[in-house]
Image (cartoon, rainbow, N blue to C red; front, side, top):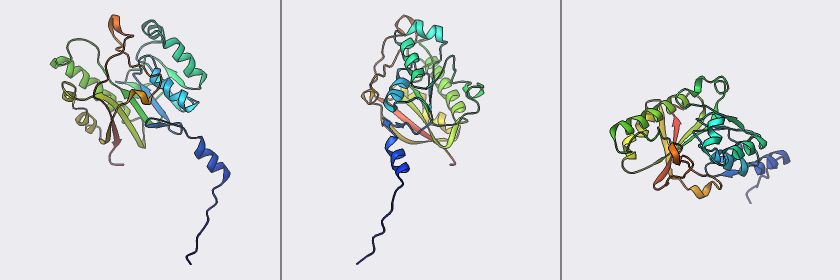
Length: 223
């Protein structure tokens, strides 16, 4: 009869494993940087699900004063994030975030940019709009690639189909040795409380449609 070896798992290890909480692709064990988060509702969805924002850095492109004037729930979202222990930073540009003194020394397991957008300066299918979006995403990858743990991932959620495929974000990522490891459908219902915002003009606090949205996951190569 074959010998069966019993392995005893320490109580501490079992408790630590049980304590890890997940929401969508993210867990409370990961150090996470969320950028360009509109009214910060995506970051709050994560922190709320985890029961803590201790390992979460939530950022907005706008200053705090501008943020709360744009979004009806921003002030409340910021307050709740801070109560949960998250780091909240404002006036963070993804084009040069690696140079910020409050981010420069840090490395993250996940860096998340949901539905990057360079602003409403024309129709989405116009060449100058596509080029503006591409430049934004390119600069994001350049910065994020320097802020990632060796085994970490960069997640860029993005619409698919025309004209969005013309952004060619996989090619932009490859410029910085980032290879796509997976592409999955973005499901808003996976993140209770998240409200995607237009972020510009008189309708900045309105939601935009998420049809055909996908999350592109990139890892640094060679690993």
